[in-house]
Structure formats: structure tokens, C-alpha cells
Length: 406
Image 1 (cartoon, helix red, strand yellow):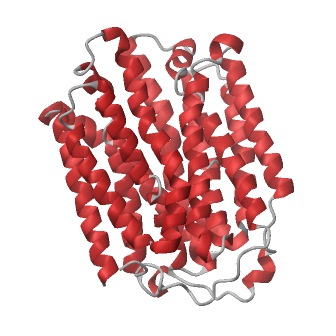
Image 2: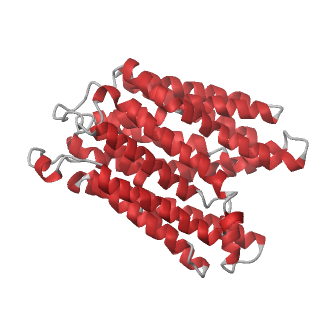
Image 3: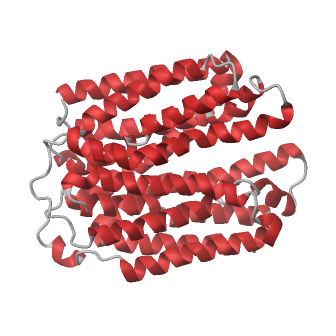
């Protein structure tokens, strides 16, 4: 079973790019910078919405949710398009486009005078962005086959680190320099990533490579079932990660006696899984390169599912923190393995298109997870969210096990 997902590797795959290590470093720093800048606004977004003329607690929360979700909506819709254009015109060009577009949009957010301008710019950010997903495609294509999951794990660690550190810095920076200056600083940081991408990343001249690559359509892939399984697994991973988010603060309130400590403990719970994933992603990717991706995918899903059961019955906040950290360790290498399997089962000039669909599937999980988690938690109880997510992960593990045996 160990190597069942890798034996369909396309024969035409070219050798690893000679600059793949330098490109990995630039992609890592660029992905961290862009994700860090994008998540920087989370702690002060409601305050900025209020400054733009929105009044009343309910209206502020509603518009904050709209502004925050607008980026994910458009990013998920255009991800396959950018992936297809990257296959046609080059992946570096997509990174240049994303970093420049995000730098401009983020800077302009600091100049907004109305809530509608902010929402429109958030929509534009989703359309123009996608640096981390583009970097994932670039690294997946250029890395040696034997080290692809490790390279993707390193990149994933940088992305998750940006997600973890961004909100922490965003909570302390606005009181020092102001909200609008924070937006401008975030735009400047992304612009530095743009410059590094332009001058340091090297890619095979796309025109020369295009002459020796026949066009491949989705219907012509050797085994579409494996690729579809990876799309579904990626969506399931994000669903399982995000389904708990809406209820964490409320759940922690039932475990912590001091109301003043609820938000602090909830923040630790939210960060614990991300920290675990950061610590394990590169190591799990390296391990998967050696023992096989399918084995790691199945085991990771099964362990994460079993860890959800005690989370439904904890009696203190520290127990939940430890279990979420262990769950992060289990899931840390999952996304690099999913990407590696998809990359190894399609031609190099079709990777961007397929991974674009993978990004869209992940965004679908990010949207559906909080929605269904909040609905189930409100109508069936918070324990049902943990146990229901456990069942979904076990189904995913069994499905991947069956696919590997085939």
C-alpha cells in the first residue's frame, strides 16, 4: 500500500530544476510574508469597520464577516484560472502578478473612506492574490520527486507560521502606529516579496518547454480517481480544521471558571493546532517521501479522527490545548502529501490546473466547515461537532485506504 499513490507518475516529467532550492527559499519567505500581511488585519478588522461608519454591534460583526470572507470567495473562484494560466505562461509570472496585486490592494485598504470600498478591495485581493498557492505549484513542479513532500512540507510550515504570527502581531501593532499605517506596512511587506520574486526566482523558459509538451485535458489523465480523491481529501482536511472554529470560544467558556481568561485560553486552543502543524509538516513530508504518501495520509486522518473523541469530553482548558496540539502534529504533513500525490499523477504542464482545483476545494472546506460546525453546534450541541468531524475523518481514511489498495 505504501507507494500505491506514486506509481502512476507521468513518464514525461522533467528533472528537478537546478535552482529549486533557491526558489524554495524565496517561495517560503514570500508565502510567509503575504500570509502574515493578510492575517495581520484579523484582530483589528472590526475596529476598522467601525471607523468606516458602521455602528451597532450586530452590524459591525456582520460587515466584518463579509469583508473577511470576500477574499476567500473570489480566491476560490479564480484559483483554477490562475493555475491554468500558470501552466500556459509560467508559474513565476503568476507569483509576480499575485504579489504586486496584493501589495497594491493591501495598501489601498489603508486609504478607505467607506465600508463598501473595503469590501471591494477585499474582493480584489482574492482575485489578484494566491501567492502561496502559486508558490505551492512552483515548488511541486520543480522539486525532485524523492524530496517533493519534504519541500512542500517546508513551504506549508512557512504558510502556517504566517497564519499563526500574523494575528499576534496585528493585535499589538495598531495601538503603536495606527490601523491605516498598519495596512500600508503590510502592503510594503508584500511589495518586498514581489521584488524578491522578480529578481531571485528562476524558471525554465516557458516557451521552450511548451514545444515539447502535448496538451492534456482532464479526460485524458491516466487515473482521474486518484486526483479526485486528493481534491476530496484536501477539502475534508480544511473542513475538519475549520468546523471547530466557531464553537471554540463558547466551548472554552464551559471549561474555564474565570470569564476573564476565556478569550486567552481560546486563543491558545486556536494556536495549538497551527503550532503542531508547523512543527511536524516538514518532518512528516520527509517521512512520507521515504515510506509512501498513501500510508501517511491514511494514518494521519485516522489519528486525527481518534483525537477528536476525547476533545468532546475534556474537563479543562489545558486538556483541550494538548489534544489540539497533538491533532496539529498529526495533520501537519497531510497537505504536502496530498499535493505531492496530485503532482505525481499529472503531467508537469497540467499541474497548475489540477492544483488550482485543489485550492478551490480547500476554500470550499474553509467555507463549509465553519458554517456546518456552527449550525450543528447550535442545534445538536458542541460535542456533536467533534464527534461528527471524527466520523468524516474516519470515512476519509477508509476511502484513501481503499484507493491505495486498488
